[in-house]
Length: 342
Image (cartoon, rainbow, N blue to C red; front, side, top):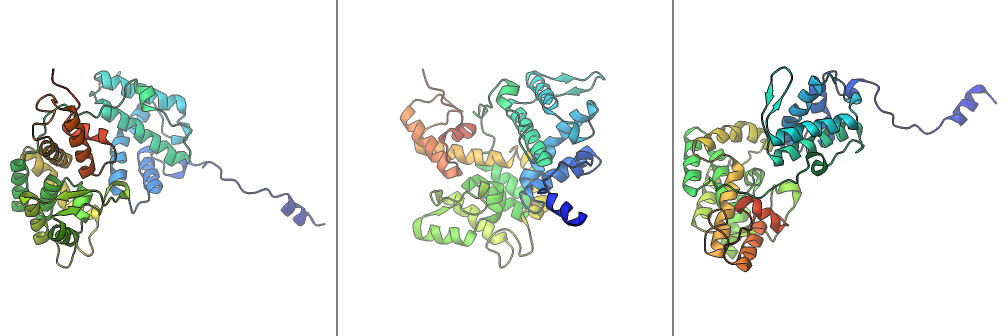
């Protein structure tokens, strides 16, 4: 038997080995490598919003690594990730002062949990496992609070003002998104991709329309139907008026959601703020409050304590349904908690 044949017989199955290159082969600079890892993990041609959000939060972790002399993701272990969690926890309690005098501002509990979540995703993207995953609740010592306490800043008048400003600035389709978000409670992606012709036909036939296209996580639900009213019809008609010729939604034939967000929507964020509306998400909160107050025939918990617990629960279920959530508890992040009247 030849030496060649013996070697072939002893060969064991090839196993995937960790990369011996810096930052697991994603690049020499840690900041760049993080972005590359996220693009590969989610696919560089999809999940644009998710990737953009994680990349934005990742800057905090990358800066933390630099300050501790960590330049290679392969050197990050569980102890280091836990130390980052401790740093974030301190920022929940107040400002964090570095030895060189630089101050990192205080963050909310919700954002602190988001930072921990992003680090978990980054390390999973690098390593391909969950070996360094940490619990936000355990590290931060507090649960994420999603109960809204401040009054909503998205009156219909303010939304229309923002829409008018967007039209003047040359962003007609961005204006349509503003109106659809406030009138129908759509997320931005839903407003961009919604089949406007289908909605029109459903309204003509049933007096209501379902929100189906562009839903978060691809969760389509025929149960998410919303009854048309004057304001909602106005928003829908305007969107149909300004959509590209031959398109069933607000995208052109060659357009993508990513290009739409960059070219049309991002400039509208500043326009919204000038009109007194902080974010597109606030427009959904305004819609949610309208739904709640219509069901309960009274003010939301953000305005006065709850007087009828049964009707409050019914209203919250309706808010969750029309927003496209399957958990009633989500309603609290839009219309406030269950603060009862004495």
